[in-house]
Every structure is written in C-alpha cells, then in structure tokens.
Length: 238
Image (spheres, rainbow, N blue to C red):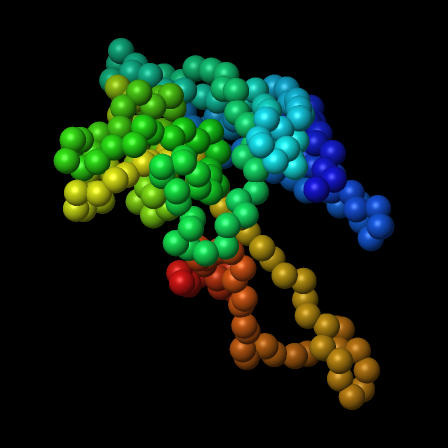
C-alpha cells in the first residue's frame, strides 16, 4: 500500500493513502487505544515520534511503522488510590493479516496470528496443567483495562492489578496448549453513505424512502456488531 504516515502537533497518527493509477488520495485518522483515567479526566496516549523502516520480514513486502507512544501508567497511591505517571513505549504497527480460513488463524508453534490490539504483548506458551491462569509482568500499570485473546479466542477484558497481573483461569478449560495476546482493544466503526437507488422518476436523492432489509457480507472477519446507532447494536458472530 502506498501510505504516507504523518504525525500532527497533537500527537495523533494520520495516513495518506495514494493510488496514482486510480487517482486516489485519501486521508485516514488512526486513534491510539489505551486511555487511562484520573477521576473523570482521561489521560490519552499520544505519539511522540514515528519512523518508517524497511521490513525485516522474509517477504519484505511492507515497510514497518515504528512509534514512541506516551501513556499514563497507574501505580499505588499512598492514600489508597491510583497515581498516574507518563511512560514511553516503543510500538510497531503489525502487518495486515493475510490468512482467510478460521482454522489457519492461529499457529502457536510458529508464533503466527492476527494481532488487532494496541500496545500488545504476547506471552510465552503455556498449558493449563502447569499454570494457574495468572499472567504477570504486564507493563500497563494498575487499573489498566486490557483485552485478552488466547489462540485466536476472545477471552474478554481484564483489569490489571497493582502487581501487573491478570487472572484468566475463568476462561481456561481442558489441558490444552495456550498462547495469549494482551493489549488495548479498539473499536472499528464503519458508517455507510446514504444509498442512491435509481427510480422511475430519476434520482432518489433527497426523496422519502425506507430501507426494510439489509445484507452484510463479511470478508476475513471474526464477527461484528451492527445496528442503527452505536448505542443500539446487535452482535453477529459467525
């Protein structure tokens, strides 16, 4: 993809996709997940600097975007609450996942799988027989809300303790081989444009009309929620 990566004065990441043959020049904004809160005030992560380098992957098809991200990290407050301080993380945007079949989505032995979280870390492989389900030494700080995916299965959200630990034992079942990805979940929202339906009297633009049925096609997706608005959605998981 021909993308020019940019950083604005507010520490936000933007990209400009260029496709000269199709005469396309389109801007897109990339929100960085991982907000922490001091009372009701959000400590939003900001990007300090970015750099694009040649890929170290074997195919070398995509350049790598590296970022230094400033995040609010919580620690124990002597008064019993949580104190937040800024820490810096070196993060890399992962390449687009190219597998299409669900049974090929996770290859634990080769440490291959889709990572669709921000500031994500991957645990060493473990089995239920030799672990209690505790994942320790997480870098996110006290009270951080993180998402856990094990072997491609969504385990849900967990709150990090003051010791940098979460407990996923409630989701582990059977003596099986697990590898967990932990990070900040983000929401991708797609809002379609108003449809233009040809009519006998000409264009339907601006005319009263009603949509009584929709069809949604999923391509390389593990599921979604859909509805008239973000606060009124239904879940659809194939």
